[in-house]
Image (tube, rainbow, N blue to C red; front, side, top):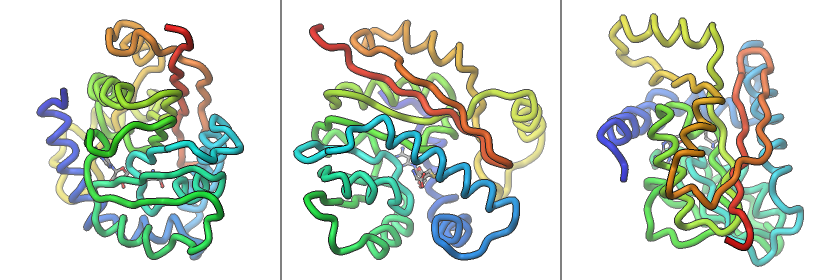
Length: 236
Ligand SMILES: C[S@@+](CC[C@H](N)C(=O)[O-])C[C@H]1O[C@@H](n2cnc3c(N)ncnc32)[C@H](O)[C@@H]1O
């Protein structure tokens, strides 16, 4: 059940990704030149996308995948190229429009249907796989686990997501950031301790049939994020 903190944060993220950050995000996810700092973020994100894609089958024909918080749709297109029937959803109408414009006509056996809305919308149907790349990094650990519970109820095989692993630098930035008014800046990234995340998942009744598999941190320049693969256990 989404909490007040989830709804509040989602509202901030919608404002941020639909207005404040559209230009920067559009550029970051294109081939256009960017600053040296942003180039490290782009390189780290490319590495992370490859990592998440490595958790999916190479042939996805006949499979449904949800790209949860798809942004400009880069991962959705890659999954469709593997033959998947992709539903890609984001709360930012502007980014979804950009994603539609950028999607190539020919995706072979695969397809992408872009939608504006919340990744927890049950009307999206059921999926074999869900991928959430950097779309949960602004939610606190308990809300992340509630989102995973909601997604798990509609997913057959695996949920692959990223979180912002807690580092000393990130925790200090987070603590300092809370002291000052946020204004137009990006909503805070919520640092999560990997052990805390694993414990919350292990304690979750709705996730009792799900097991953590691979987890892998990518740290390139100004980009740090950690992939986490959660798999539905067979035969339960
Ligand atoms: C950091 S961006 C990442 C976008 C994309 N996954 C990528 O890696 O290029 C996070 C995205 O998650 C979206 N988002 C955040 N919360 C969401 C929610 N509850 N439902 C759908 N989209 C959400 C934001 O609008 C934003 O576009």
